Image 1 (tube, rainbow, N blue to C red):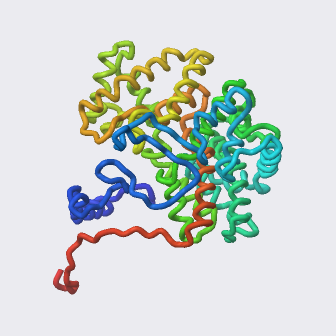
Image 2 (image 1 turned 45 degrees about the vertical axis):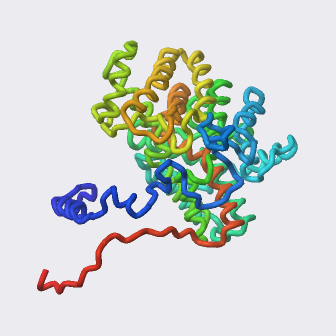
Image 3 (image 1 turned 180 degrees about the vertical axis):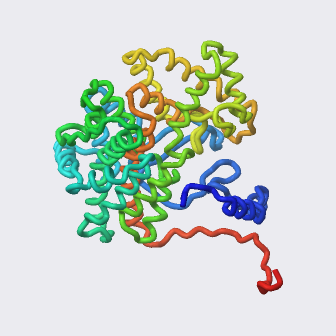
Length: 450
């Protein structure tokens, strides 16, 4: 049997399901249901409290009214720009950001050294795990392999179901330390078994940073430049956390509130992050640009603008009606992560001789907001988000498209861990929102009368 085949029966039943779906878009407004947990003004529905991070896009003006402002992101009360300024160009910062997000304080040098040693000591996988769980069952999607591997680690844990803070912290540190290894090994297996490339599995190096080790494991010659490692480390910091309301972090809270184990909760978050509306967005951005370069003369500003209009009118690329990398659920004037990555992209484009590519991205970032504002009804402004430049940065780093979302997960496991611990510490009640049933009651009809 071909399990992937959509048979005539399945097609017929799918049509039946669609025909019997009586929910119409206007019903949400009629019943005051906020789709996406956001109200009609775009404000998120408050579902919890957190100290982990804060996302700000509005401020009070002199009249006491909320007005849009340049976006701000805070990790445990510290502005992301200040955090980046504190380490960038001086040392690798991802491990420092991990410490801050987990323990709500910046580490001293001695504390950071001890913490990095602890993370490095966890940088290994159970014996034969790579062979049995990854190489023997290679897949075409790195996120699915990553999720499967996380669930499999449950079987190697002697105390998997203990949800005390101490045990969950131990589990989270182990996952944070090994996520990049799982992602790279998953990619290696995919390259070999599905694309016919030579198989290599490098041994992890405990004496270098996570960003360096990721490049060290991914590249056959294990070589990378200081700037490459520095920018990848910065990207990991910028993606580590983004408030409790993003889809995968909210998933972590919801699943954690049921009292389940860490491996199940993190696997659920991975499933959320995989989606192109969340962690898969930067892949959509670079492939949109690939289509643009194949379709038009990108030195012609008019052609670029026409292409962007066609995107919105569902006449170009994937015909989804979206300019990928533009707009954000919270930010309107700017995304602070995007602004930082834009600077890095410019610097990296010089080293990689990709200035023309960078300039094209700059043009689209300039044209798109005006075109979207003209073509779409919006409740707030629109600007490039972090996904707009992150894919470009990863491409210039020579990272394969298949690794873009797994690298996001390598970073975001930190935020998920901080929120899981926070949920365990403070909630004690399962998250169970309400849905309104709009189907009218019917009498049961005997089978002979149907």
